[in-house]
Length: 162
Image 1: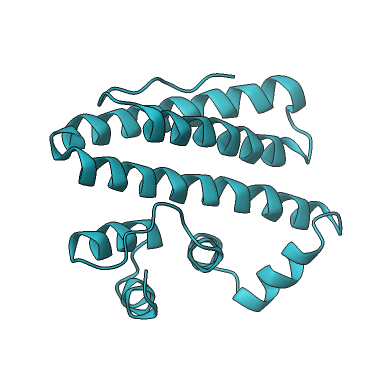
Image 2: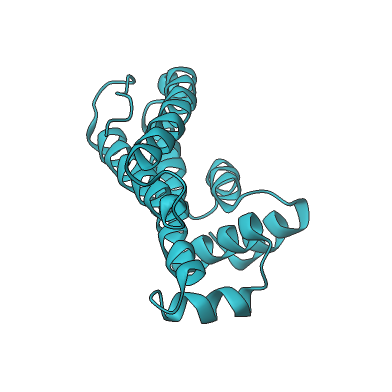
């Protein structure tokens, strides 16, 4: 994705994953993985924290619980963007998969959220590290789905697991 695509995404308040899909559709760079810039911009958008503060906290993930959470959340955001990029690449390869992949990813995200919420709650209910465990669960499940999308020859996908 070019800097122009990133500026437009920010101006239109799009996620950078959506901007990457648009850029690919418009003949832009067709990256199959998000860059560090993509991840940071999406993290800034989702957390509504200033980029400088985020970068400071992400430099030392063990500084405090908020830094630890933000580092885990960064991995979840990176995984979400990777999934968006992988689906966009699969749709470019096999346009007939678009509708089924879109449905499968929506179903996956819903199941993943429920699974990770329950999993973290079962182990750590009410503790201050529950959100960290949930973010790590989301990242792990999403990365597994990314691999499934990239390696799959079919349009169907599996659902999140513990």
